[in-house]
Image 1 (cartoon, helix red, strand yellow):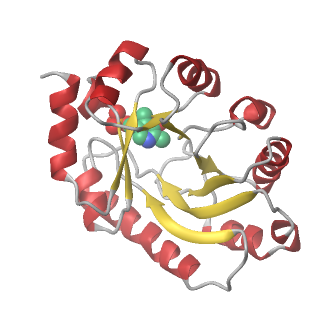
Image 2 (cartoon, rainbow, N blue to C red):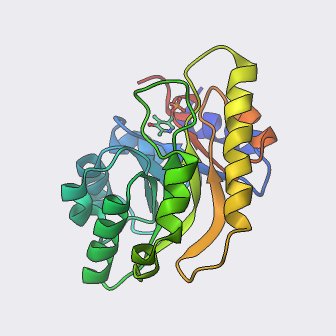
Length: 220
Ligand SMILES: *Cc1c(COP(=O)(O)O)cnc(C)c1O
């Protein structure tokens, strides 16, 4: 099947209120252009350099999402154009994004990444760390970022009930965040969870944004 028809299949299988991020990491611009021509405007990349190169070459109405782990010293390269940073997992990184956003005269939307998997290797905050950041005075002073919600990755396992448990946990934290004390730079609307293998389950658990790569562009 072509990229365009796989994309349309995925779009048909997700409800209207769920946003599809087409994860195009490692794929050539010609593949991304096939998705673009089929109507896709939101692309996800996990390396800043690769995302920047693609941004330079591709139409300017694309929204670029950084879904990977971000090194503080590379934030400046994506600050002029990135639409949403999914993997923010420290105050230090949030502060750097704020600083670079300010230099570019813009506000950058961010998701805080939660550690929900049963694996040491996946990045992310626990619930205490999350609320510590959001309740601090330092956070209040960040005027050029907006925290739009949470992102998480489930354990890489066949065990559906474990994945479901992790997604439900993330949704619970998201609901707490929505009822937290209001802050000018906190506007929790987005719950980014679900990839090719588990997006249906993620949607049934309350996901509002799915990040799908291999089911659209093929295996990497
Ligand atoms: C690669 C990646 C995805 C997409 O994975 P697929 O299984 O190809 O759909 C989603 N989220 C993150 C954070 C990724 O790194």
